[in-house]
Image 1: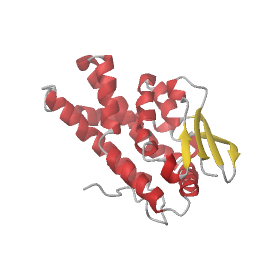
Image 2: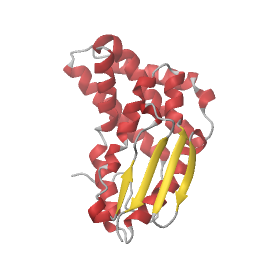
Image 3: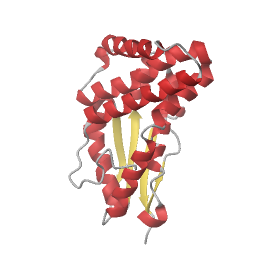
Image 4: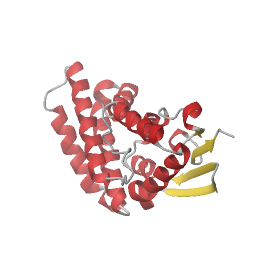
Amino acid sequence: MTTDEFGLTDENYVPDPDRDTAMLVDGFFEHIAGILREQAEPDDLLATMRRRHEALETADQHLIVDEPARYNLRLTLALVAAYEILRPRLGREAAIDAVRDALVEPLGEALRTGTRAMLDSAADPFRAMVELAKTREHQSFGEGFEFRHPVDDDRRFHADIHRCFYYDVLVANSAPELAPAMCDFDRNWIDAIDPDEHGFRFERATTIGLGGTHCPFHFSRTDG
């Protein structure tokens, strides 16, 4: 049974980057382990990935700009480590797909369920989502991301990201092709939004990882 593993329904919700990153990274490597078994790859390959992950973290400490960046770096470099080792074995496209699935799928249902439960229980789902987004900007993303808010009123909240720490880390490690996988992770909470039931819609026409100049995260009421 899927539960609200991220605690989104707690009215006093505060992001816990340490806990959340640990869940994501552990789930990621567990999924990768399954792929390695399916491909009949050597048993010690996962340990090699883990060691490479640790080495990348050590080498990239200079990229950390604040506490949230420490955890965002760890997550992003897990993808890089797995990709470096999978690519020569599976090929570029298959390796990208494997990394994407390993990031998106393990906790996808939990995130959708938690987000949906939060919105279903909120007196004002639009306001609840906006407050969650604002909280995460500061406590989960931090100074590694540049947020701009061209619109922020009772009917619309537009958060435009003009710098993405995830993308910067991938570029620094010669793996920008993994950026769409990071973007796809958001589908887990985006798909929990039902405009008819929750009274607002979400739009994200593009992202930096998909070649856009910025990532537009736009929330707009649909009622009245």
